[in-house]
Length: 111
View (cartoon, rainbow, N blue to C red):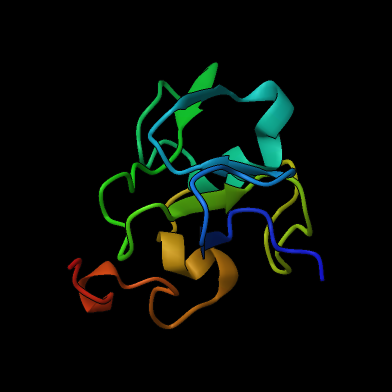
């Protein structure tokens, strides 16, 4: 099953599978990841001209040794202007969600 670009998923290991990147706040160039930039914009950082940042979820994992990763190669979500910009929309509106798909406050506490 192919994942959606921008989908964040918790993996039971501490590395990113092929087509995914760790949610570690890293800065990416817009060019190779233009579809992901279309979805995220500068929500998590970057200058919006040449680069943007991924969310930083390091330390938010519910289980030690697991990792949150974001899909960078996959299906572009329906309803998004491919290669364009989402200008003045909320992140949840990008995929027409009524509420966020990931609610960290409700994740299991670390033990």
